[in-house]
Image (cartoon, rainbow, N blue to C red; front, top):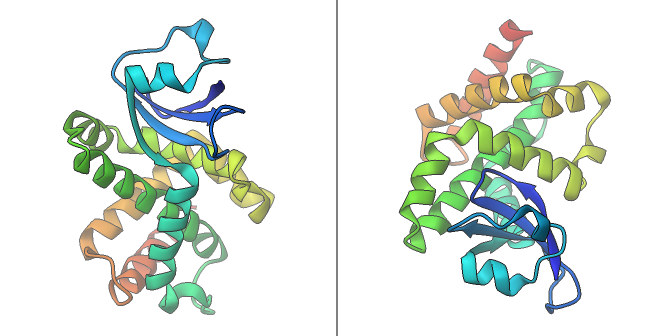
Length: 196
């Protein structure tokens, strides 16, 4: 048994198993059909398996994304005196969300779940916001930020505004590398100063 603790959209959910599996990791599921509301608080994992597909555990996603980020952020990890405090603080978290989204898309596509890949691409900002809220609340990222940054990351309109800005800058420099990430960060930081 377990419960659905987050809905990234109507078919993409995060499930927290309790006492029936060997792992206590939250699991990202793609559901082919909606689970009745009355089952969402106390649902056997077998029901989810029968009505959808496991994509990845959230712990595995977090570890994979952390490795990817660590391999490319060396040029920006040390805040320069020219970068804004706000830009420096939110870039890393938004980058984590962006790489998480890209990883989920890759896993979905690798499992031949092309409708899911398309759906994520077409509603990326909405799913990114909900994933960001999951990371803040359930993986304790909220404890790593001051109140000013948290108020931006938890406000849907602000989150999407800054996320879209980051996404646009990353798309300009892809593929992400140790060299291209600095360009994306510098442009993001420059533009964030004008947004206020």
